[in-house]
Amino acid sequence: LALKNRREAPVPAGPMAHVAAEVAALPRCETVPTIDASELSAAEFAERFMRPNKPVLLTGVSNGWRCRSEWTREDQPGERVPDISRMADLFGDAKVLVVDCDAPLDTDLSRQEMPFREYARYWHARRDDSGGEDGGGDARLLYCKDWTFAEDFPDYPAYETPPHFADDWLNEYWDEQRVKGVGRRLGSHRFVYVGGKGTDTPLHADVLRSFSWSVNLAGRKRWLMVPPHRAHHLLDARGERRPEDIERADVDRFPDAEKSAPVVVEQPGDSALFVPSLWYHQVRNETDCVSVNHNWLNAANARLSWAMLRDELEDVRAGLADPDDAADGALCQSLVERRAGADFK
Image 1 (cartoon, helix red, strand yellow):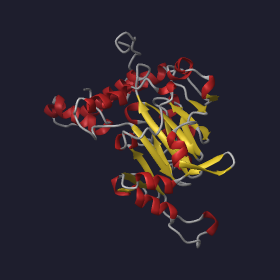
Image 2 (tube, rainbow, N blue to C red; image 1 turned 135 degrees about the vertical axis):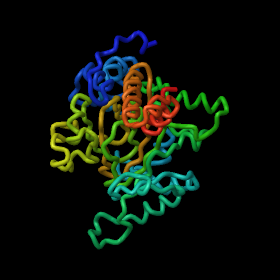
Image 3 (cartoon, helix red, strand yellow; image 1 turned 90 degrees about the vertical axis):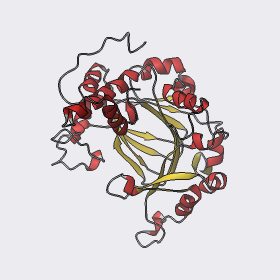
Image 4 (tube, one colour; image 1 turned 45 degrees about the horizontal axis):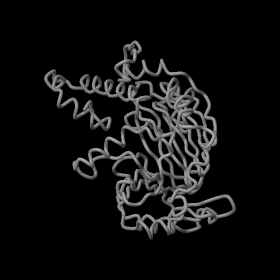
């Protein structure tokens, strides 16, 4: 209904034209305010940040969460660190995806699946920063990412979604499919991340151009966030690729990357960062971190996901040389799903 009653912005010509039209209609934003979660109601959050697609950092969100008390420990007064030994005791047999952050590209070749207990052994064997280059230990930067923990352990109430982020069509849809008996592993956009100092996630925009929220249970993260109206500066001269790291972008290949002027956010523990749709971002763990992340959709941003899917479909059709293939709806939808993570259904 929200999509139906909304007047669409004029669609300009060019690649990703539907998304570009939506970006042009969004209010501009250059800052990320920090607000105590107890001082911002869900309704105020929706009015000030969610609907206008603006980021915000909420503090004091994970007090009382089981995962905060069982997955982290106090290292010094007021500062918590991941308790990997405790997590291994609780979830050691769980299969998790681990990414090598030193690999030149984040592809399937840089990813491996292992029991969390094995990742914990790596964690404890890591090189000590104080030891220098000859300090011994495992020098790899391995990051446990996209762990669908809530799906793996449905009877373990690790946390409660903050009320600000509770209107979640995307995960509610997957939950409904499981209740209908469609089966596990159907899909999930609830994740846990565990990474040591120096691990990172390269530049990207979230799946389906969804919202995301990230609660840092322990440690400190550094985010670089590019407002949508400057995201076009990230593209190379051919308009096809973006750098993995804005701060280390090849100036010959990405001559305008510096103009993207990302907003820097330092995220402490016990805080939630709301990342709006279409905000390209990259994240680095400044210290050892453990976090909970959700991707989500609702009436406030479904139109942006729809615009992205329409652009993906047009791009797929344009790339098919055979007119019959371009007219094959089933084929085109399967290619859209492969590229975007969903199709029109």
